[in-house]
Amino acid sequence: MGSPRIQPFIPRWTTGRRSVVTLLVAASVLAFVAQNIVENSYKGFTGQWLCLSWAGIQHGYYWQFISYLFIHGEPGGPVMIGVVHLL
Image (cartoon, rainbow, N blue to C red; front, top):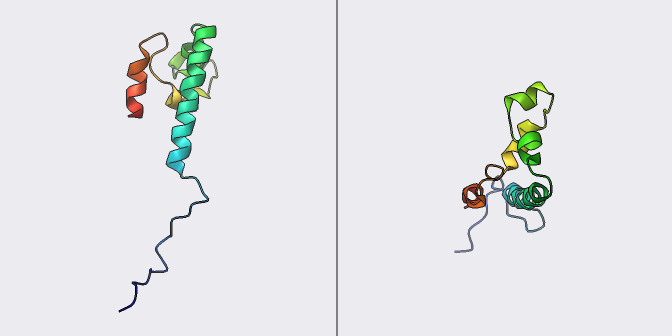
């Protein structure tokens, strides 16, 4: 009996490429750090420019469709509420 053969249609794990999950976690951590730095310097910036809102869309802030995905918690609210979804 020899070693089992790997089927050709099964993809092999490669060590040189990053997974999408790793990239999304890194982007989320970077967004968390950036949000806290910006919010401490400019109060209300996150809520006005990055959080998804009807008023923002009416003003043409179309990036809010993407940026709201990375917002961690309510601006000015407790940070731990926003961090819980990372666990």
